[in-house]
Amino acid sequence: MKEITPYRPEIRFSDVDAYGIVHNATYIVYMEQARIHWWRQAMGEGTWDWAKVGVLVAHHSIDYIQPVRLGDPLEVHSHIGDLGTKSMDVHYQLTCNGQPVAMAKTVLVCFDHARKTTIPVPEEWRQALELMGSQSPFKGTQGRA
Image 1 (cartoon, rainbow, N blue to C red):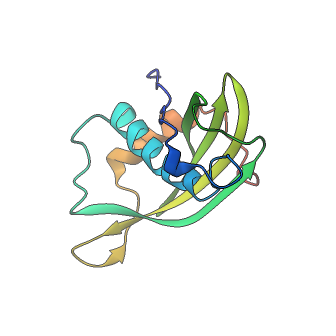
Image 2 (image 1 turned 90 degrees about the vertical axis):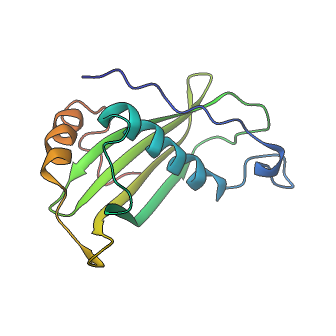
Image 3 (image 1 turned 30 degrees about the vertical axis):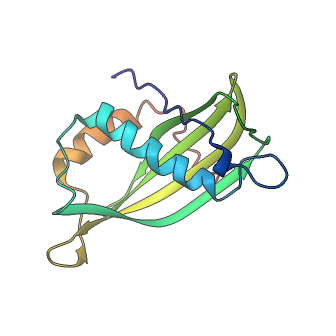
């Protein structure tokens, strides 16, 4: 399996709320960026024509464990989870200094932009994702974020 490096966002001042911690909605932005970062490494640059076949977010869930503060060294580890006929789960572990700060999951549904309809996971994606998913540390955690 390819070694996938985690996404390391810079915690910006605008990410922090009045309590001095990263605002809860900002985690979704980190997760989105982590998915793109993960995809490029796992599947290769240029393997996805976003204008033709894309994904829609059907669901997000996040379990917050510890607060993240301005300047913290956040890492977002992404892994493929379960694959359905038209959907896939992406699991995330967010850490600071190796300690978990959040666990999350996004359910993505494949979508044909030209026809404006959901479609099965493309076969070339499925083959690569199944291989990676079988080795995911999050496999079997579909009931938890």
